[in-house]
Length: 123
View 1 (cartoon, one colour):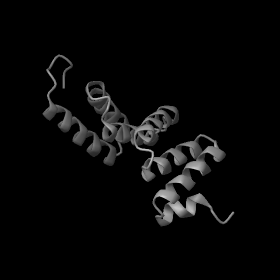
View 2 (cartoon, one colour):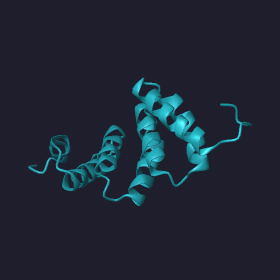
View 3 (spheres, helix red, strand yellow):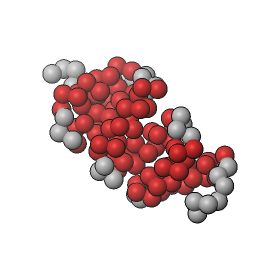
View 4 (cartoon, one colour):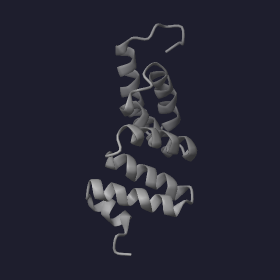
């Protein structure tokens, strides 16, 4: 969508849904581009920020992913998925202590098998 076109709530929803599809189709950079516009208009939209964090992670842009996941967790400290995804980001960035902390928080909030396994409570 050209930048001079007036944005409406509908265009923001369309961009968000299109970004979900782009991420699913393994085009994280395209998803980020759409989400940048949505977040510029709706910086409080946590769902858009979480999706953008996932897209940054998929594009191996670890620092931006870390920042977005951190913003999500500031707003939703009980978001187990965001803790798990932030932990995976730290793990890829070579920060194992920070990763383990967030893996454990994810598992404590939601004891899904993948979260519990990553938390390594038995070690």
